[in-house]
Image 1: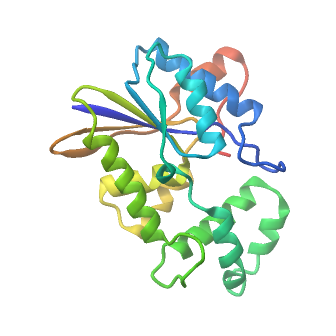
Image 2 (image 1 turned 135 degrees about the vertical axis):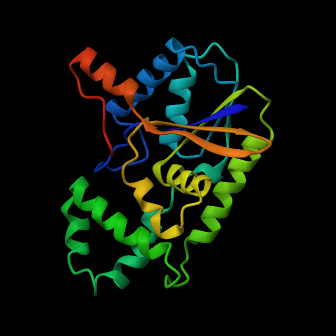
Length: 233
C-alpha cells in the first residue's frame, strides 16, 4: 500500500487586491502543518502542487520541514475550480431565481460569498448548465482524476506522496473515490479547512479514503499557542 496526502492550501487573502497569496495566518498554517508532519515522522517521498501561488507557497513551506530532497512537481490539473470565471458567466443567469445572489456577492462577507459559490457550483455541475467559456464540470473532473491516476500509478509501494491543492479539487477527488454522484459533491467542498489533510491509501486494487479534512494538528497548536489557526476561507 502507498499513501497520498491531499493538503489544502493555507488561508488565502480574501478581500484583498490579490486573493491568490497566503495571508499571514495562511503562512502560519502551512508552517505548522510542515512541523506537524515532521514531528509525526511522516516522510513525503514525492510532492505535487497546482500552479496557483497559494498552492505553491503552501507546498514550499511544508516541504521546507522535510529532510527529503524531493522537488515539488507542478501540475495545473490540481488547480482550483475557476470560481471567478463561473461567477462572471452564471450570476446573470441565476439572479432571476436567486435575487439575493448579487447582494451576497457584493457584501464582501465570507459567509455570504460562500452562499454564492454554492449556488454557482451546483449550477455548474448540473446537466442544465449552458456551455461556458470557462472549463466545464466534465472537463475539470476528468482532468483532476487523470492527475490523481498519474500520481498513484507511478508511486512506489509503501511511499507517501503529497498533493498541495484546493478545496474544490479535494472534494472532486474524494467524491470520485467514494463513488458519490455529482449532485452531492458540494457537501465535500464547503467544509474543507485551510491546510487540512485528507489521506488516500492505494494499491493496484484501487484507491480508498482513509481520512478526510483532518485539522487535528491545527486545533492542537491553536490551544498550545492560544491563537486560532483554524479557518475555512
